[in-house]
Length: 415
Ligand SMILES: *Cc1c(COP(=O)(O)O)cnc(C)c1O
Image (cartoon, rainbow, N blue to C red; front, side):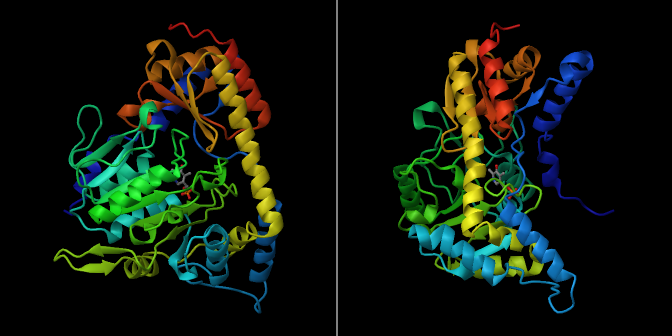
């Protein structure tokens, strides 16, 4: 009989979103009249239609595929040159970051890239992750065998958890001890916090001193409103020697269903072999992508390219401003409800302290039952998320306003 990957058996059942669905369904079954009224602010998925520039470009691309003269089959695995050039110029060189076109690797997903990156990293790394955290970083390390078993509170052996609390602005600080790989997500899902230049400088300095690798997830870069907050890790001197950056078109262009993202691997970034020689990571990622990936679809890459046109940029801005407007409405609503509110300024997520010592799940049940609103319990993102909940701003304005109204009107006395 074949052997399976035992590491998968260490995974704690991905229970957060299934458990949310179960509780919402139970509530709707028990309260059929209220069911129509439920507003979902749980899962972080966009709600608004695609920018027209992307739609037009994708229509044109489909038409090209319909004629022999303009037909395209397999493209370059790393992405078409015109898209890599548009990305490197607009997202990096225009911001003063020295990134070459061939350091951009276009893919169909940042979620996949943040997991797949482990293909090119060795088994002995000490890995640091924030708590609370985007669960993908943890689970992909479990699958890859980089962790021990989970303990009763769900923390895995061999991982270094970096607590994110109000005292550090929900941005982890470099540990005293040595780690080899650090996952950073800024602006952050789930807390909505954005790392300042000083905080990122401290991490780059740590990484250079420890010859560590920073895996920087900037999926929410477009939501940065504070001019002092860096948009890329490469705005920090030295980052080309210690960081990989992940970006996605999911949250800026609303491409969650279209699927396009990219990863930046600078050619100056080195890691060590097991015998201690330094070797660049760029050729490994190139080999990984050309072997295990066959490129994002031509149509989708044309759609992504259109987001960099003048009209595309304006449409992306409008989309992001819509969600940030919702975030402001939700922040204000939660604040007027007497809640302690974080995030929502440089990110589409509001991170809220539960009142009256409620647990995250108790708050979930109370808000569902009394306000008919679905939020995400903070404890689902890690033990430090206990006592918080996340409200997503991905919604219509009318729904955001209604949620704000209901939170204000709600009786927060524990059931
Ligand atoms: C939404 C999101 C992404 C984007 O993932 P895609 O696979 O590109 O849709 C990446 N990182 C975080 C933290 C996210 O929330």
